[in-house]
Amino acid sequence: MTVRGDGSLAKNGGKDGLDPQDRIFLVDVSDEEEGGGGRTLSFSRSPTVLLTFVANRFSRISTRQYIERFGIGVMDWRMLVMLTREPGATVTRASNVIGIDKAAVSRCLQRLDQMGLAHPGELEPNGRSRRWRLSLRGRELHDQVLRRALQFQRQLLSGFTDEEIKQLLDMLRRMLTNIAKTDDVENC
Image (cartoon, rainbow, N blue to C red; front, side, top):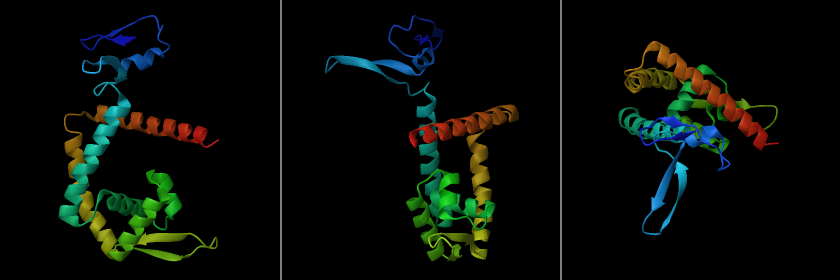
């Protein structure tokens, strides 16, 4: 299938070697100055592009608001949520759940410790891991930020029906499952 100028789909032969579904996500481009052209991802029809755009804008706006209102960034907020959900989580566990590298998680936890929002437990028997917990101040800040995060989420989902939200959540969970499979294949 290809996408016509009006956005509708048209079937074609597949002589270009692309999976038919891939054509939905592509747009033909030209560079009149250089005399070239080709295909690239559409800004409006590629799920990976749209997800990246939404995530980037969401992170930028939330980071600015959380720093201004609460003195923490989005990564700090994610760790407050993580340690509220799983008190005693290790750096490795938080990294696996959140999907951010261990070094970034470790830096974030050190920052939260310095701010008095979280604290490490004793060294685990493996000699490397510590279990992290929120302090009382960290739990209080979590509750304050949570109210703002829910408000921001309502704004983000404005105009969606409950059914659409359920469908979106299902699709996002399926994408996470597919990404995990891709990551597993790459690590083999």
